[in-house]
Length: 388
Picture 1 (cartoon, rainbow, N blue to C red):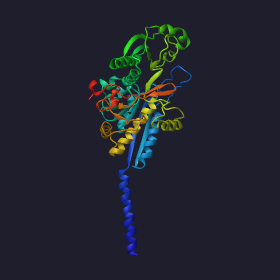
Picture 2: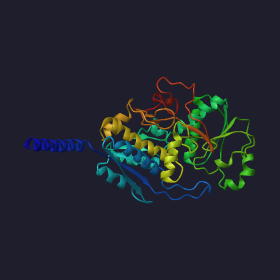
Picture 3: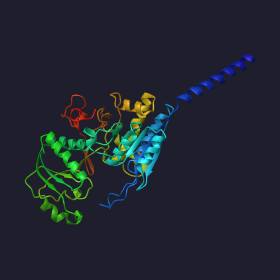
Picture 4: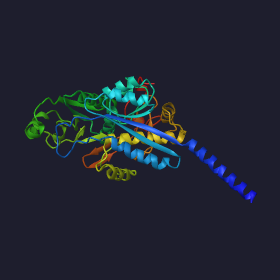
């Protein structure tokens, strides 16, 4: 009997010790998601309703996937949502999260606010930018401790140029809107045209202030009377007039750019490489279609999960080192593993070329070679940047 009692005692002690060991291995990974409420803009089309939670739903889906796999590694992922009201102080909200010790922060804010947070951060947290396309962040104004999830304008323009070169549609007519973002997109288009040997045979600015929906049928044919060209390239990031150009041009030509055939990181028509599965899961969660920022936020959370699982660490320096290493590979439902460019924090990824109701292709295309990674044929490559 004493022997039996002693055996039971030893078993209890062993269970307690093993429980303590496993408990010590448990990890709580806290991720902050910061954004600011936006004023609902005037509706350009009743077919495209304003989406207030663009980005957040993708982060929530990524969190769900991380916790599904994390339960086997004794990991718990928590997402703290910081939604600053209109007119609120974003910097103060960000500073509070830094003070609380959160080191992994998803930022869904415009470029100007991202720069402010990056300067305030002082390299204490790793920021995941899911909103900007700014080329200067990728080759000149390099932001330390910031990873960019969306393709830059240069990556999008290069994707279009690769396909145009394959089709031998080499003569471009560029129509640019009058906003600063339109000018940046037009600049990216000109860079890609030069890079791939295209010729911009005509260039015009759309300066009309009236509603294009009411006057497109009469004004666009007149506006587009230029010398012969193969494609019309639109630079209209706000969608103020670009949707009304197709089928109304003086010459019967395809429309590409911000409207028509668009270059995007994600599209509702994408179903290849298992994408239909994540499309359906997202729709069940959010009751709408996944958009670019949702996809970017999803990838940010999944990248964090992959890094924590592989390194067994959840501090910003360790996560950053792994994500920028050659060991990091992420499934992105695009047929190729995704990774980050170590010199500027840009996520390497195929760029989808999509028409309104169909996916056309996903550059980089076959034949566009690179000595290290074909995904680096899109956007600014390492020798072209000042980033280290």
